[in-house]
Length: 424
Image 1 (cartoon, rainbow, N blue to C red):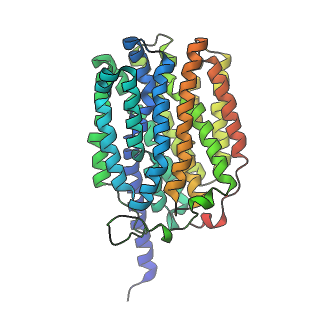
Image 2: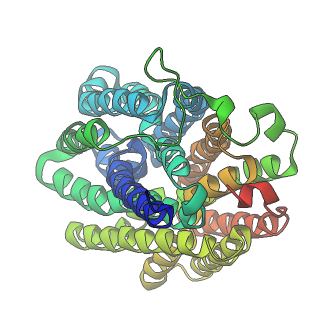
Image 3: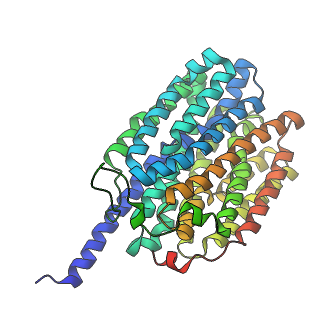
């Protein structure tokens, strides 16, 4: 006769090991997504492209705006595909296509000038949408339910740390590749990450949680009716959904704008390439610590309150640079803003699961993250336009500080998580 008191803990330990292995795979996978490889590095290519072609920073930053709008349009569609077919097929297709477009970017620029850049970034972002956090937060939200529910925040925090981990690698790598081989070599070198690293991870390491029911015919679609939570329509009738949309827009338009312009901001002080690469690496490493720390705190305290405190660090830092725009303050402000923005995408992924469940998670998260991408479309472009108008970054930092302050206020307006979500 089997002793159930023994087999149950053994089964839970086995499930836990598999779940945490998936966290590691998601961390490495997120490191190779289109955001951490290409989109966050628009600033790295900004000065080289401007010097080569005579393009203004606002015009170059517009490529990110176009990319963000492309991803915003693709995200709800990608979310629906993930809900229907699962994470792996969407992930594999996305990595392959966006990697090929990164490699083709120099050719597209050569043929179409700045319009080639815009088209390349639209394709990278649109086809690369499935390689981003939308896939990995859905994957881990399925694994971290039931007995692992109280570890979900930490799991998502570790996974989303793949973005700053990727930035820690790709931003310095991009700077050094451009310095050695020109801007074309920068794109060719970065294209290897999704194709050589990301694809094998998606093909051989990623798998769905065992508790997720799948239809026997067709081999893939998730049976969403068997999962707990709200439909997209039901979610749209809640206050939390609309507050999350507003916060996602402000988060990305303010904080991502600062992140994108960090390289040209520091480069304007005449910083050597190796020193700029070192600071960008430190910045990325701090982002990893911030995201993991935020996820750890989400499991222990009410996530919106934790995030309000974290974002206040970014607000104070932005106001600090606006008041005193020196090199030392610029370095400190950008590093502290990275820490203060550590609760961005993992906050969205965490609270979407808590408020709305898993039934239509891909669609709901895709909609909220789509608003996040619209903010990325606006913020970095407006930062570039403001720099071209004022010749410095003081005013953009001032407006960013105000925007982040509004985020903190909205965080305090979020309702408590539904009781049934706490039990999942």
